[in-house]
Amino acid sequence: MVAVMGKKRRKGSLKETLSYALYKDDTKLFTVTYRDKDQIKTDTLHDFMEKEELSEIPITRILSIVRDGETVWSKGQKQVSVKKRSSE
Image (cartoon, rainbow, N blue to C red; front, side):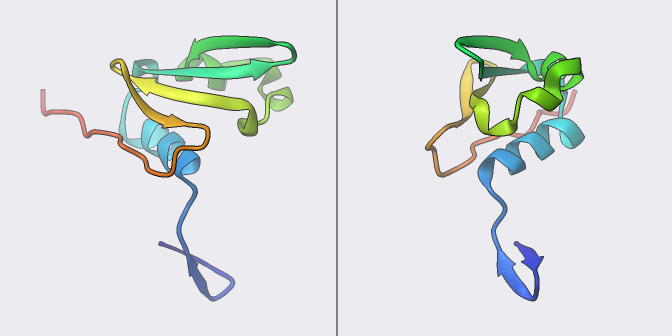
């Protein structure tokens, strides 16, 4: 839970997924499908975050995020199902 102006509020699942991927996992393992103008594109999260035109691609255009063939977030999905990495 996150405190916002004195009220507890749950973070959105897209933000949770991105936060998990960026800070607790390897962004190269995640694939992002997003709308870019009239096209649907797919990139690794690592490449997506490094794009210069990222400022022109709002996160609201992300359609899905996949890790190891499993969809961990998709537009309209309520729950996040990111699995923790096994110890190597």
